[in-house]
Image (tube, rainbow, N blue to C red):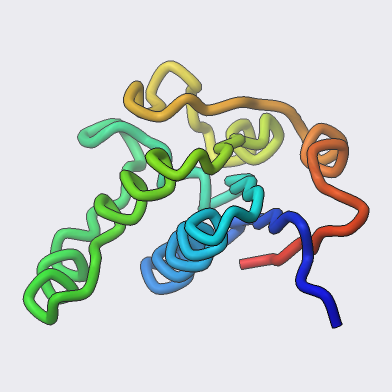
Length: 132
């Protein structure tokens, strides 16, 4: 079976492990020249909050543990995804449902926005959508 031409991730969970692995998979796919979109919604959208913004996750313990084991942190994975051209989208409905103001999103990531229809429009008919 041929591998998909694009991977589109719905990052629904705000759980550290799930967010981390979505970024691992996204950066790995982009590193081998697959197009990738990360669509952050519901608690997963908190990943895109600026440090210190209301509701921003505090993953300092998990980040320190990964760093101590020589495993890339979420911050490092976000940087890799940016460098590799991964597309970031924030779901308007997910932001609203979680009370997240777009003004509180990180400024170092170009975050597109839209709803489920925009995400599906961005996906490829020869790609794969993964729900994390």
